[in-house]
Image (cartoon, rainbow, N blue to C red; front, side, top):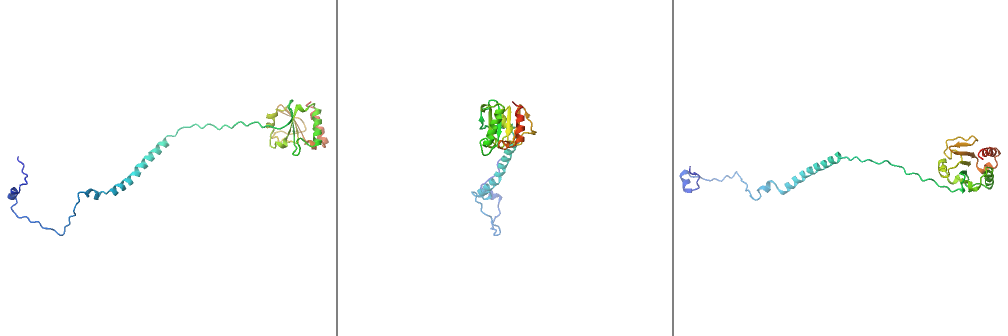
Length: 217
């Protein structure tokens, strides 16, 4: 079959024999369409930016949420090492004597290195009564080391005998009771007596001290 579509004007006159009139309708306005701006009028660049700014945070928030989820899901098991207290350094003391026989003598005088003249004279008699010389013992003034306990003294001096003049059991933090008798505490023999200056004029306390000193000779 031949193609029956034609654009020939002479041929068209054979089919359309009646007059055709074009009438302008003032009531109908047909807006002119600019082919160049047809797409941009319906979808401007600003609309594109707005839509991008609205949609973009949603994508970012999803990515952040996923990252947070991944971080939460992976919790490495880290073993925290226990805190170990550093060993306490032994306290050092200034003392008189040589401590060759491990005899610790504690005095308690805030005004003098050892005691008053009367107290020092009494101490010389005491050490002589138990056959001790200056190289044999160590004299420490507790007034210079307030708060020091027995364990700290023992760790430093390792005393076999300890004579305490004016230093109480509670000062040394010992759970002991003094009953005017020698205390055997571990490997240490302990004798408590009043401050040397007071002891010099206390006859009763002096007699008790002499009695105990005879037991350690």
